Structures are given as C-alpha cells and as structure tokens.
Length: 237
Ligand SMILES: NC(=O)c1ccc[n+]([C@@H]2O[C@H](COP(=O)([O-])OP(=O)(O)OC[C@H]3O[C@@H](n4cnc5c(N)ncnc54)[C@H](OP(=O)(O)O)[C@@H]3O)[C@@H](O)[C@H]2O)c1
Image (tube, rainbow, N blue to C red; front, side, top):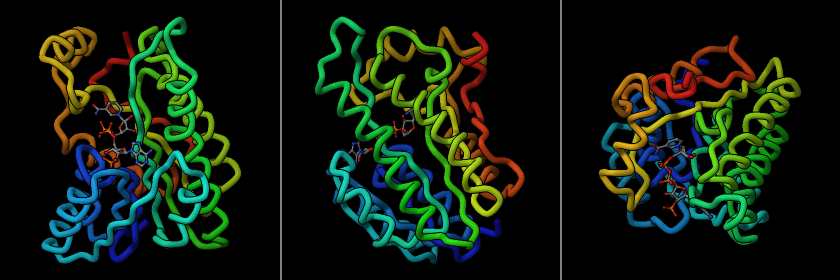
C-alpha cells in the first residue's frame, strides 16, 4: 500500500508507543486520527506535532471498555489503516486475578480490537485496507504474572489470523509482537533489569526499530495473518 495521503486510526495514540506510531505514520505521509482515553492534553499535543509535519490530525476520545463508543470510532475516523495499539497491562496470577482485572483486559485488549476490526471491515467494502494489532511476545510464551493480559494478547493473535483469512485479498491483517520497548508506567529500574535478562539482544528496542516494522507491514500487500516479533529474540528463550 502506498501510504501517502491515506488515513490511519491509532488507538491510544496520544502518548508512549501510540504517539510514536502516529508520528511515524505522519512522517510516512499519512493523516492520522489520534484516539485517546484519558490523555486529552497529550492527544492534542500529538496532533499539533503531526500538523507541524504537514499532515492532518484529529483527536477523538472513546473509552474502549464501552462497546458502543468503540464502534463509533471507525465511522468518526473513516480510516484506510487501523492500528489497534491501546491496551491495559496489569499484573495478576491465576490466584489473585480479580474478575474486574480479567474483564477489563478482555474488554480493552481483545473486545475493542474485535469491534474496531469488524466495523473497519464492514466500512471498507471492496476497498483495500490494513490492520495491525499490537501484541506481545508473552502471548506465545505465557508466564504466570500477567494472566489476563497474556490471555487477551493470545486471543488477539488468533483474531488476527481469522480476520486475515476472511478479509483477504483486499485487507491485510497482521500483528506486531513487541518485547521491551518502553518500561511500563510506574516500572522500576529493577523491573527493567529483570526483563533484559530474558532478551538475547541485551537491550530494549529503539523506537525506530518498532515503527519501521510497523511501516514495513503496512507497505507490504503479501504478508497477512503474520505475527512479527520485534523483541530482540525474547520469544526464542
Ligand atoms: N511498552 C512496551 O514496551 C510494550 C511491550 C510489549 C507490548 N506492548 C504493546 O504495545 C502497545 C502500546 O504499548 P504502551 O506501553 O505504549 O501502552 P500503554 O501506555 O500501556 O497504553 C496505551 C494507551 O492505551 C489507552 N487505553 C487503555 N485503556 C483504555 C480505555 N479503556 N479506553 C481508551 N484508551 C485506553 C491509554 O490511552 P489514554 O492515556 O488516552 O487513556 C494508553 O495511553 C500495547 O498494545 C502493549 O500491549 C508494549
């Protein structure tokens, strides 16, 4: 796909990785709809930065735990490209995961991408399009500490594959399985050291290594249903 002058919807695009994706897409010539939940000020700042790059940008708010509000996003944004980036990431083992923890991960990390992908597929009709879902190497190498998060991302991998089959040949659907890129908000140096012990590359990713992988998936019309690991080899352990 030639990305020039196309429109991307990036969920959770106000800050952190979502912001980086939104800016990389703008640098690649796309207009961007920056979805946000609580981060209205950051969304406005990201939009300003996109406009300084010479592209159009709009901020849209929706709580992705609210199914109706989530579904409306696609109508509002009319995207050619959908990036399901927003997620929650809260610790919990089988024994201590509350129902609320379980349901919020499933709602934001899996149900919302499903609703957005369904709305996107219906809206595209015969037109081409791209969907990229942000996943995690943990989805295929489950540990104990983030039960609901891991299950939600594993479900997202399967959703990616099923959608890729149904939406071919017009729409390609892929996932990026990230390793450590940005430490979780509130994480400590010790957390980061523990994470890096499992990463053959011995370091966290450069932002450009992640955004370049996103752009490569979007530009390629022959890759679909794929999960691309951008994790310094963490999934090999
Ligand atoms: N950071 C990493 O190193 C890493 C590693 C592996 C995988 N990933 C994946 O990469 C993606 C981005 O990571 P990140 O660390 O940048 O994510 P993040 O900061 O944890 O979350 C991204 C955004 O999701 C939005 N969000 C969460 N719940 C929402 C809700 N109910 N309604 C609307 N928006 C909601 C928030 O938007 P507002 O702030 O506007 O509320 C938040 O800014 C995620 O899918 C994550 O699982 C990241």
